[in-house]
Image (cartoon, rainbow, N blue to C red):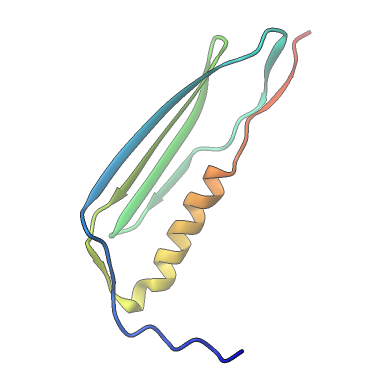
Length: 102
């Protein structure tokens, strides 16, 4: 396989975006939270991503905000953009761990 050609043009987005999601999950009877994913705060000039997971009573609350701030990312910052998307993907794969209540 031949190596890929180096990118020559910036990465462009169509629109600025700010998307916030809130999820609430009621714990099943007889279970409590053992572990929660750590909070994530990824701030770059061109984008940001923040997430938090909290327990209130028998409800796990998960909130995340994804924002594209700059419509064009120069080629010289492509590695930073990749890092940003890896952080987001990693957070999306995180899980809460439950254990039986005593």
